[in-house]
Length: 326
Length: 305
Image (cartoon, rainbow over all chains, first blue to last red; front, side):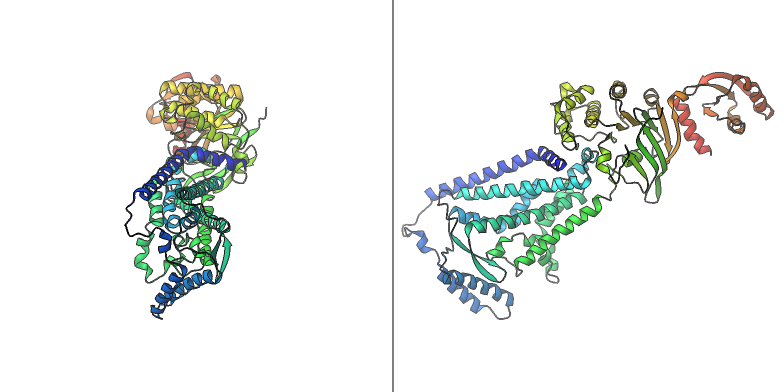
């Protein structure tokens, strides 16, 4: 344990400047968005015939249900998956109506922003890029500069070096993710905060349930942690096997960012995306019935956990047997 | 007096592809001893050192440090040694002090500030510790790496070509430092180098390897013993060498001379014996065998066989 803490401390000392830079960039970015949103609110052009209460113009659940029902009826029977998805959505909105749960299709409280930022493009695309900046070269840079010798010649085993780096990438990434969520909330400070105990509908398997917002946030953070862990394992695995800084960063970018383009020609013949971890990072979308594919939460969890097991096994069986020529 | 063995390498072999890099290598280093590790380029010195530090795994044999097997009990074994393999690996963007702290945190033991400062004083880097290592000269980096190796109060320090790339004053500083270390701490030093003159001045014992095999091991004190040098014609050198071997002697070739260690009263009969075989001895003189002679004789003698 003492060695692991020491190793983590070492990683922090080596990478703290980079982390400070990422945090600084994030703060600047969010401050910019915050200032723009305030300026936009104050000086935006308001048409003379605009209603004083914009909320009155927002679609209600009933409107949404009618719209979905129309789309569902118009969808041909052959499109089984699309019909299934629409049926789930109709079920989702009907559940709100039947259980008399307050639901706004568009809402602006800080808690709603937090809830919405836990799912979608941020966790499945943008944050993985931040994680590449944090740790895609964490092992490869030490191997190419041979500074890994400093650790190899100490009484820390090779696996301990790997574990420390993995924990560092996962831990720092998760902390940054939480910090960015807080910044998302701060963006909406000029609106109201929202109610922690308000009820929210989530889907677990085939059934819908009502949970308080605080519980949803808790589950959302847990799901995001699994995604961050999976990405950390993948990045460390790439960094270990591609022992060159540029190569490991390029391969990480290819696997994380450009995989859709790479896989696209093959997706018609083989539905490879179904088993690819990047398509399953957004676990929270399962809870909100917004997952783009047809897989269940359990299937996504199995894909992510399998990715972790495969990456760890590859490194585990290689690292202890390998002759390190440094 | 029987001294404890700090490291024991027993019948270690290593193959890389189809080539045997290390072939049944055995050696040991006693407590408080400075041992030189010699061999031509590509003889397997660095591979042996990498195996001794656990970076490469032997195919056969065992390596024990203070009785702990480097494979099975890596952490326990590595607590007892400090090593610099080839060029020192330091973080250029960190200060000298932070580089030491990096080693302290993963040393597996409590190391207090006084100990760290002692190590810094030992390598005389007090004035430069807060500077980034990328501004250090090669000699300073070597010294910092030695300070890192000393932090855990190891029983042995392994130095792989520590004088490589150093200027003459750097080499002298390194030699002084190694002597000082042994004298003040009693630490054993295992040092590989191409500079025979350095090894000669530094070491208590030398081990010569070639093609992964131990060719010879010799105490430096026995190396300098007086010997008789016989000068014969160049084309008769090999014949004379073999004839003296048949007489039960251990001749050593040095330039165009043959060195033998023999009592003075036997020399006339030996010269007569050579003469009867058609080998003329032109000069007989008293001389000493240098490490260079020993090294060349050991490595070239092997080729003759």
